[in-house]
Image 1 (cartoon, rainbow, N blue to C red):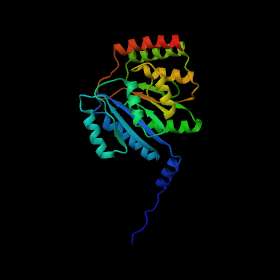
Image 2: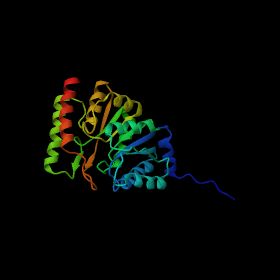
Image 3: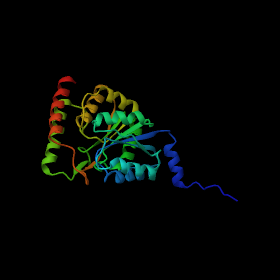
Image 4: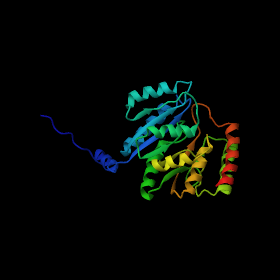
Amino acid sequence: MVYPKRETRSSKMAKEKTSDGDKYSILLPTYNERENLPIIIWLICHYLDSSGFDYEIIVIDDGSPDGTLDAAKQLQKIYGDQKIVLRPREKKLGLGTAYIHGMKHATGNFIVIMDADLSHHPKFIPEFIKLQKEGNYDLVSGTRYIGDGGVYGWDFKRKLVSRGANFLTQLLLRPRASDLTGSFRLYKKAVLENLVARCVSKGYVFQMEMIIRARQLNYTIGEVPISFVDRVYGESKLGGSEIFQFAKSLLYLFATT
């Protein structure tokens, strides 16, 4: 005789949490993240599976020469092609276009954007989701600058540059958000599509413009304090050209918004 499988308390909780029909598409743009990708994907799956959320992870690799795509293919075999969706591109084309590319293939009604270098811990994603549901926010942003948020692994000079850049953006743009340059956020899919269509910036400044455009459109913004940790493996992609682009774009946004 075959007995029906008994429903455990944890499985009941998972059903309750996913009964609203929401699905979360997590966009992971990658470039030379072969060492970090297995860890970040394991962490995402651990925290979202334990919370009972329906999700997919979309890896957008921009032609990494270090074998990131090969690692992603192996991870897809482990976790399945329903959880790990691969949408690579031939070369590095920029962060904004990576999100556009990923959104085209996203099946969720919510989209999470985050870095793949372990600077953003997936343990905060359930907190983003909880806050979004409580306030029905259009977007929820991780912030390093309020509450118990913070930055770890940076030297004093880099922290000073980050604080200075954030102070200037607050002074000039008055965004009604505490962390404009962060790239760990949860969006309603329709909101993200509308914002991306309106943004003209590329690279790291793209994140800053997204918040400014959200303010212009009167989208509601929630904030969750996060711990930002400098990358463990690989080299930072932030250089002099990005800093120059930041200053140029800040002046552009000040003049046009």
